[in-house]
Each structure stands twice: as C-alpha cells, then as structure tokens.
Image (spheres, rainbow, N blue to C red):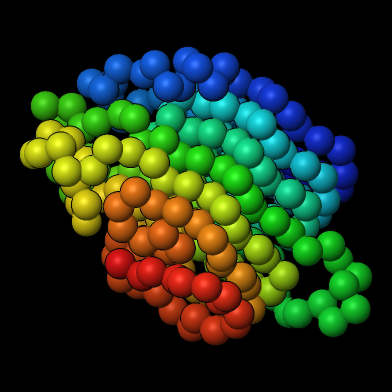
Length: 239
C-alpha cells in the first residue's frame, strides 16, 4: 500500500525561493542531500510509495533534486493530474527518482472514454547549476544533470504509458565549460526526460521540450529505450 495517495487538491509553492536556486555556487557537491534540499513538493524515502490520481503539484523549488517529487528506493505512480512549473537546481525539475525506484507515468491502457483525467508534466525546469567536485572519482556519474520533466538514475525503472503529456519542460545549464564543467554529450540534457537506466514507453506524448545540450525530448544516457510507440508530435531528439 502506498504511504501517500493523492486524489485532488494542490501542493503549491513549497521549498526555496527561485532566486536562491539561481545563486547556488558552481562548486556545490551533487552528492548527499536531505529532505530540505530534495523534493520540495513531495519527498519519499525508502519503501514509501506515492500514488497520484488527480491534483496539482506546482511552483515548488529545490536547490538540488526533484522540484515536484523526489523518490529514493520507492514507487511512484502518477496516473492523473498536473506537475507543473517546478524547479530543481540540479536534476528532475518535475520528478527525480533514484536508488532503485519504480516510476509509472500514465495508464496501462488508453482510456477511450477518458474516465481518468489525462496527466500533464509541463513547464518544469532542471537548472543543472551544480558541478562535479574535484574529488569525484566517478566522472560519468557526476555529470548527470538535467531532466526538466523527469530524471531517473541507472537503478530506476521508468514506464511512460497512455494519456501522459510531457511538454514544455527545460534542461538548462552551461555546456562546453571544459573538463570540470558540463559538456554537451557528457551528461547535460533531457528537457523532457533524462534517464540513466531503462525506459519503457507506449502511447504517450513528448512535445516542445528544450535542452541546452543533448536530447530536447529524451536523453537516454544508457541507450536502453524499449517499446517506443505512440504519438510524438514535433521533434524528439534521442541521444
């Protein structure tokens, strides 16, 4: 059973001021973090599960991960509602999932009669302000930045199904700064989705997302993109 079930209402304007995210120092470490730094809207750690059937999660700001929702080693089911205009200073403007989480966005089958509301992830931003620390030994891992709509790490399973609209999200940063900055192709991207693990997709829409570097629609860092079918109006860069 889920620890949290949301069937309506709103979670609005929680977390840091937007200006505090913009002022983060470039040398801030990407590792560590706690509930005050991650998951401004909803923070779930461990086996805690989240089910969202309707409602709005919007305008939340975190200096690190998961402006709207942060999940570590849990399960997130986003079946309906809106996640919009959230900001993360590092990864996952709308949703950030890591540590073996399972994320299900959409419904297993198309709702022909629209008995369930469509769900929207829109207008979220991952600012990718933080940089790898000099002491980092895992440079590949330390350069995972972005995922304006959704970020999932290498241990997380991501499913994007019917009735899901992921649109107008942004992955912002400063690519091409040299070996200790963020480089195009080295881990900045995914305006809509940034996935380091496996993605399974069917019947969803990914439109009008933006990245300053790789993958305006999807940045599949592992290249493990499975069963992609459905509607994708506009350009869908895959990297």
